[in-house]
Amino acid sequence: MGSIRLKTKIPGPVSTDLQRRRSQAIPSGFNQLSPLFVARAEGALLEDVDGNILIDLAGGIGCLNSGHRPAAVISAIQAQAQLFLHTCAHVTLYDCYIELAEILNRITPGSFAKKTFFVNSGAEAVENAVKIVRASTKRPAIICFQDAFHGRTAMGMALTSKPHPYKAGFEPLPGHIYRIPYAYCYRCSYGKSYPQCQLYCGSDAILDTFQRVVPAEEVGAVIVEPVQGEGGFIVPPPGFLPALKAVCEKYGILLIADEVQTGFGRTGRMFACEHFGIEPDILITAKSLGGGLPLGAITGRAELMDAPDIGALGTTFGGNPLSCVAALASLKTIETENLCRRAEALGLEFEYRALMWQKRWPIIGNVRRLGAMCALELVRPTPERTPADVETKEILNFCHTHGVVAISAGSFGNVIRLLMPLVITDAQLNEALDVLEEGIASVTGAEEITAKSRT
Ligand SMILES: *Cc1c(COP(=O)(O)O)cnc(C)c1O
Image (tube, rainbow, N blue to C red; front, side):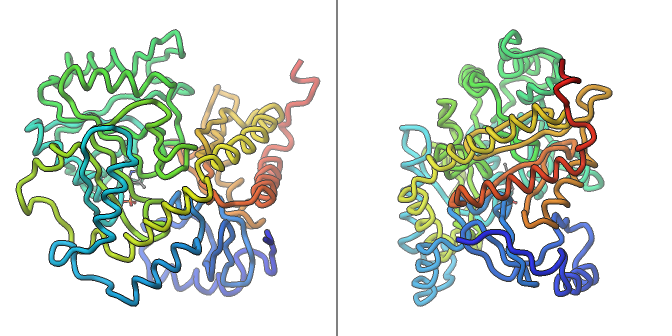
């Protein structure tokens, strides 16, 4: 398969025209992460409206683990389109919905009986997980984390950490939400260091919160991303989630794992929770679930899922048949193409290159990854670890104009995150990393760590 091919400068003339129309027709608050307008896509490649071919390291923000337009997904959608498009799952249900629920009940962590239902998005999955927690525990409060992202609906915003641009100006938000620091070791909120900290953030910090902020008996659930996504691809130490789960169990609190971004092979396992050996009571998914179509799911212990009254859970389009057949085909693709194993190989390649960059350039503050959920946190040296947000934007801009689509993350806007389709070839990944490397060199070349300055 080919790779980067630039026919015009980026943005080209057709993109420039669309950009003008975009600004007229679409609100400026609707964020734009690249200057590109797409015409078609395949595997890990995008072709823009000016005929330029780019390598995609954003994967529609982690929605394309099985690639752009996997053959099996396309034929499943085409076959379903010949039958019916919508009946509403509440009115007349269909086989593919039930089959997908059965599969998620089986493959998500936890050997207990589970049930699943489908919604349209990650945020909607978050909303429903909280409804189920409150209906089943009769406890109002939810504990969440700093740097968390859980979507843009009212409850999603309330659980999300970063005020600008996600929440500021949109208050009042739902109450009974309490926030504690995550295991962000590179910037520990407690000023501790791992492992001497004995995972204070995952255990004692929560007990302290029960004592000083909200009593344990009012807390229905803790919601956590097993690896934080928008917050900056923060990978916690191995003991963090087990410690958290132990505290939850001790106090009768449910654990919701938000695997919207980490799910479906991204981290080298089907679900990130598997790396940490925890079984959440409720696990929510979306993004890569639908193989490119919109779909979210709430999977949980059967007795919890049955707690809301009949009719208390619902959605008009959720679990649309096209999305369900696409999800079934995408899951099959992840399995038959061994994409979990592939994710680890891609992550290793990234890490090998990124650790060399870190030796060369002081701007590379922290290299993080779990499987192919890969990130660089960029910093300036004075004062130590100052977020290099401007440079992050410059590097991403360099990537876009040189044929690579990549996006940032992080509460400080200084993390470059990679969410490439897991079907990307070695040659494509290396070519994309070459561009990223040139981008880093172009903004920091003068500050290269020379052999002399290092000694
Ligand atoms: C993207 C994301 C969401 C929200 O998903 P939408 O489909 O955009 O509503 C929720 N949680 C996490 C962890 C996410 O990454």
